[in-house]
Image (cartoon, rainbow, N blue to C red):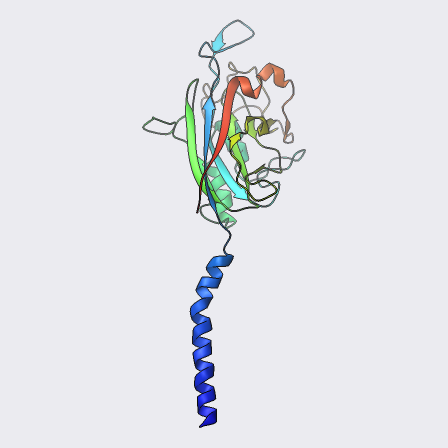
Length: 246
């Protein structure tokens, strides 16, 4: 009889512990915060001036984002582009290859995505002066944001943060909000020979087909003569807003 009571007691204890397990697991799950990101083209409606005096509009292409704790998720500075779709993003403003590469690596769903439809537009397209993109996601402390989008009137220039990404939480674990425009760097993918901005025949608005232009066989590097290309704060603005805890 004693053994039976002991077995019943053990069974009840196991049942109680099992019932509490989901609650315990839930309490250990990292708290996430919903963020929204807005990318605005604030360049002059009068356009940029080419060497021959003609005008061309500054534009930004559709892009992609990825959340990760690691560094160098999309590229390595000083190394050739990986076969991960970055070339298509930098040359043609097409983020689908980068997303496909992440999916093939089984990167967690919900931790990457595309933004390609301007705010107020009916379908995908680039953003010119006064245009903007907006996208949202949820992230837990320790996760960093990586984005990539093309300098639309170039051969293979793109904007992205450095290889350490943009921290979404401060050292105390609190979510950040505010202007992060200065975190974006203009990169040269090193895949296509550069032509004059805004007028080159092999740049996205004028090329006959995607992936055209003389091959460069270079490395991913910071674009030179940034003052010629234009400072970030003169051309676009990127802001992050932490919306609420989840």
